[in-house]
Length: 311
Image (cartoon, rainbow, N blue to C red):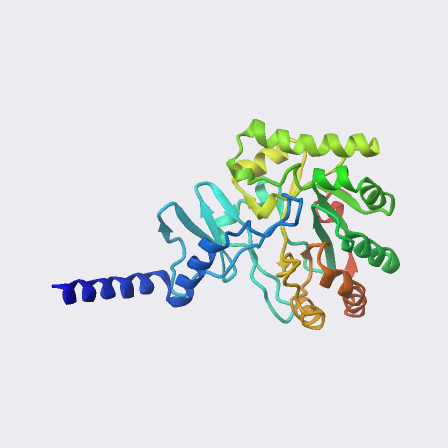
């Protein structure tokens, strides 16, 4: 009897592994339970943009719905959906191929969402900045030296702790945009709570500069819903996602600079909206070289006003 129970348990385990997409998928799920996707935090800061997306286990079908979870797609990458919330992620293409949004999310642009520009040699540099560790200033130095514009999606924390840095962003011609005040999961908010988060960030920026924040919104963690996009649009915001990002967010596990340059350049494509974290030491080191290589490849640098048709 004991042998039979062990055999049944083993068979059940094999079935679960197969249905989950193999041992790699099981390992991913174990990893996520140990280290959830919003685990990356900076000492004394609660507002760090965490890891974004991962591949769907091999063999999982498009449109499959598990318990409380479904999957939308962007190219070959999965977008995990819980309830009405989605976590955006775009596949890394090669040889200049432009990533495509999934058909299941064809409504994105109809609800004020953007992730890719026109098919021309232009790049839109965007940065998610929640705090300063010395590298944000280095990023600004690089942009100034190369005379290219950027868009900084910031949190209230940066205004409170580093007001001079935010003033510098504005003074040097970059767009300062809304990443919410406290970096919550906005898919869990009511409309009133959603609007309050954005307005709190607006108030902080207005108090500091006497001006209005640029009306571009990037959801924390790339988490959004159709309602979120509509609510943002009702407040005058375009929601800006991205067509390229890479693993640059973990300050304790920074990528090798040479490998990072190769990775980013290999993924370059027309109309690219690139997301970089300016707290990354690697990004601060490689940005001047990236900009020079992009220029040599014939790319220019556009603004979100151009991307979203506001100029």
